[in-house]
Length: 210
Image 1 (cartoon, rainbow, N blue to C red):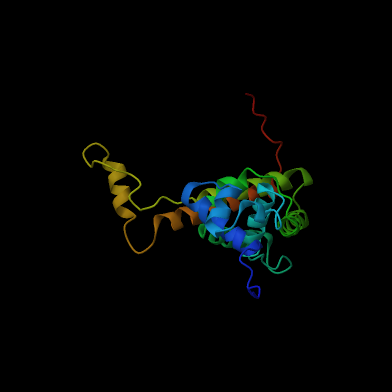
Image 2: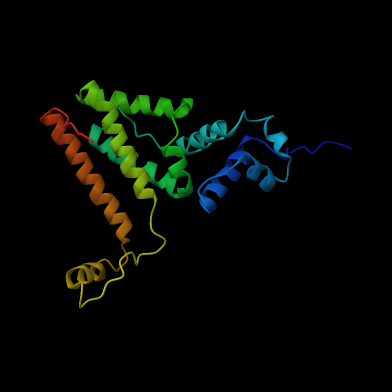
């Protein structure tokens, strides 16, 4: 019998199954991926060494969909703003992967290359080396959190008699513009403004004691 021209299992199919499972239940196992692809679990090991490698391929999937702005065009703050918007748009496609990837170390070459470009942008703008990673982490945390949107716009169950100010504010958000998108843009503006202030007036980082 001739072998099928299109393989039943490959890296893109493994990644797609993992993304779907993460959206459905927040996690995945290799056994669950195999079941979804209708193959034996042992077949996966011809393509990936284990779960951690699947996570790296998932990270690469997102990295390929994030548009890095031309770092040598415009100003650093405009570049970071464009990057954040593209980053959020990519993760909104599969928000179930946020928790998994946020907790996993970065080894994927494409993602590391992207972070290198961002680090070069920040250092070139004048930020101190010691601030570069914290700045990237704060942007990362904000964007990934923004990708985890509530299922609907009715986030607050208010009683106008008990919560008059909040009820009025909730009513004011109803319209063509989604409050989640406005929240993201407001937060992004504040974050970039904070970066700009740090660049103009460097300060010693605050020490947090447990």
